[in-house]
Image (cartoon, rainbow, N blue to C red; front, side, top):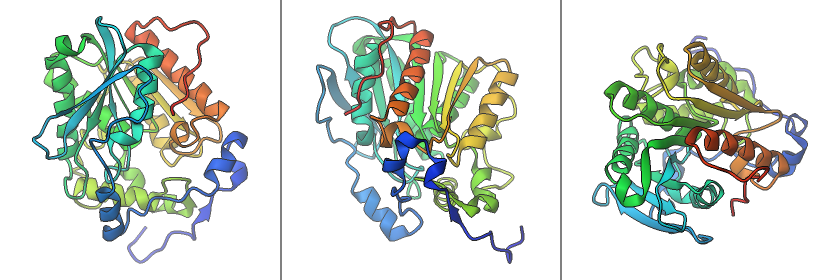
Length: 334
């Protein structure tokens, strides 16, 4: 497509394209206003990185600043009882430009309680003020901190999974690539919910013809442009920034990739999962029919969302060697 050509007029997905249990929640959900600098600045200013969880349900919490107040840190969620546990390093979403770890506090508490694991939720700096590699550096600092403090926080360093949602899933996948190349201790698993993996999706203007629920391609292009410090789709985008750019995926830890089939990221996520499997990496792709972006968060109590989270947690429990009560469903996240 040349610069003078315009994409077809955008058509919103129909409510009937959504899973019936998700229509009420998603039919009116807007895309976040991330394309204008002033609205983005307001959204970033409204984030509270150190806000503690409202409800802990017996799970301990503390925040550790990793950068002297410059935006990187970890929230550590620890189930009651002193013993060595598996752990999950979790990375929040937000298109690389909005959000904070606080948005996933309830999710982290529920996961720690569900699986009796330590959950370490990473706080990272946001683009465009802090483009690549700053967010990935912050997540890498969180990984390094977990390994260095494993004894202190009661974690088995051989049983640490890396996971995240959306942009956080992309950062988690990029971290896995970087840690693999560095050598040393490796993640036990990668746990990726609707991950943001491929800047070339944003560069493909044909996707503008669909106003995807929650996160459309115009928002996607704004997020990638901010993160990369320039237009997406170029020839020199590093794979640590856009993991789908990686040509050799062999030797990576087992992966679970989950996404809805009406999510903008469906095709890039399904392709990444296929390529992982082709490279010999054990990989499960879980596609939710009629599932839009971030369904397990925005419609957390819908039966289809809880079943999705249960499948994801069952897979993770098996990879981490966690004994989960038979037939137990994922707990509510709030």
